[in-house]
Length: 316
Ligand code: HEM
Ligand code: HEM
Image (tube, rainbow, N blue to C red):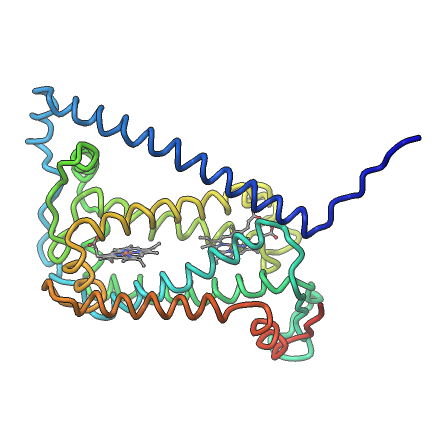
């Protein structure tokens, strides 16, 4: 007699997935902590070498801002920075929901009798993907406004490197961070080279990759023609998720550094457009976090399905 084990339900498989994900996260935290200690020890040892000290003297980790660089962080930049965090939070949540492959608690099919009408019949999609795509649209719109304003105001000079010396200087700054003897920077006037490179990469490299790979995976991409072979779907699939991991790693380091290098001044700079050390910026930041918590709690399937029903058929 053969014994057949019952197939695990979808819910059980999703729970298993989350369990595996948590175990993997814990493992990563442990490995990262050990690595961190090793990196600090190596960096401290490197700094005892005369040649390395000479290198640090030659490349202090920061470059003077090019002539004409505006001073300060304007209020519009603070707004864009906040909206970026706000949308990304929910994009990452929906990203994890999509990745978990759990059965969405609802499906949406676009009503194709109304604008925008397409020749191709709309495909039914899960409510998580529907929300992911709306958030992406707002996030991209916010990003486009940010980049246009960066270039319209000269503010781009603060985050786009204009001198190859940024490379050795970023290396120098990295070594200084790693040895726990942190490099100087005055974010109001100029970012250090490592900050500048990191900001440049997240805005002008990682974000375009997220957008391009996301579009490739979406039904906006043509089903036939040269674009299909030029950019294989498999490639997009294998890049989209690691890109999110890169975002998460960036944000983690970014926020830890902001909170450990004069948090009150920095929060004033980014959240209140001023360069002082009172509690105003912190208060605005706290309010912005509260708003993100509210959005997190509200953006659950019941409300999402009600909104989605306004533009199509919702089932499930
Ligand atoms: C909610 C937590 C966050 C806090 C508290 C925070 C704080 C700050 C602060 C104080 C600055 C000013 C520069 C500095 O001192 O280094 C800054 C700049 C920046 N942040 Fe964040 N940040 C957060 C989330 C994010 C996220 C999620 C991203 C993108 C993935 C991001 C991307 C950037 C970029 C690109 C800049 C440079 C902007 C420019 O000068 O044009 N930040 N952030
Ligand atoms: C314009 C921007 C974006 C578009 C058009 C887009 C589109 C999509 C689509 C269509 C899927 C479903 C893929 C599938 O059917 O397998 C997806 C999944 C996903 N998205 Fe995005 N996305 C965008 C931006 C982002 C960003 C910025 C992040 C995170 C920072 C992100 C994280 C994810 C993750 C983690 C998944 C699940 C991937 C997997 O199962 O391996 N997406 N996205």
